[in-house]
Length: 199
Image 1 (cartoon, rainbow, N blue to C red):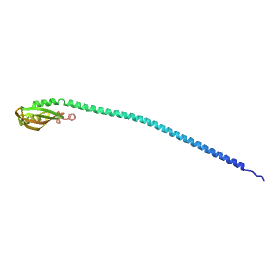
Image 2: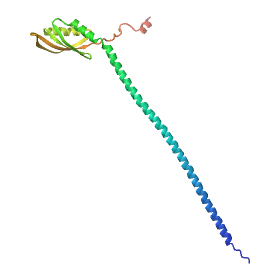
Image 3: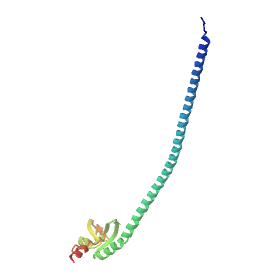
Image 4: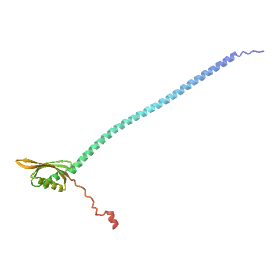
């Protein structure tokens, strides 16, 4: 009977399997390291890309903020110019007011009435002076109400005073300046389209 010693063969087979296991573990470690490196490199590239995008966005935001400040300054300048334009237009529209007021006062002032002061605040005019009697003040107020430039006279105060050793009535009254209103179209005249249809 022949006896075979299988111990060296088994040990060699065990050593071979051990080497294969170590090799597999090594390959797995290398593959895991490679995969980790690739993931890290991809994440780093994405982070760098996002950082560059953030830098571009911050630069654009800074430009937009500067433009917003400039637009706000332009709006303020425009508003100031519009307000100045309104003031100029108002002055141009009302530059003849003083002439009309003084002209009407001179034309409508009855005998025995003497003006001391005329003040204008917008469309309201304050008139103060002296009159020989209450009737003269009433005559002045009626004349002011009939003027085409003045309306709504109202007596504020009247009192008896002594002026240069003579008795007089000191008065204060207010009156409104009447602006010229644009003429309305005549209602009796038919419009052009209606007259064309009838013809």
